[in-house]
Image 1: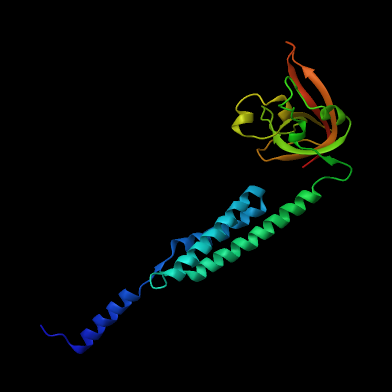
Image 2: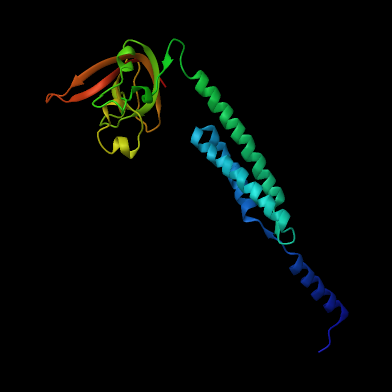
Length: 225
């Protein structure tokens, strides 16, 4: 069976195309995807891990492509992933820093749950001495609303340190919750997101009928966000 010159040329061309084929780098594709998802870095500090992964994947992809240029392609995708990740990383940290520095209303001081924890090196300490010093101070604090049967028009609620299993899996620790009472006309609609409240802090330990402490910290809030 004879083969024409044109058929030989076609086969040679097909062979050259097969030899010239280069696979698209999976790391480059993943970097581009992570770059798009890096917009989430604008929402919370921990989500900065997304652009960090995008940059790492892009760098790895470009390194592998440079070492195996005849086998891999996708350098532009990797570069795009790196650029997107870097832009959203910087934008996210800048925005969150700005929000942190400007979120406390004028006239209030920032308070964290860490400050309200007892010193574990002091046996039997139920609360830190600073808790008494904070009584009457105007403070700003963020936390999660402990779920209850009421979901709307809430005036009084427990603001907790977190909403993880360690907290909502059972009774929150005394120093991980604040009894908040909203001043009129403020009311809260329950949600699982963190809330920011501000008002006058009160250190007023209250007990249950059986003599156990029910709550240590209170907040008369005139700000809710």
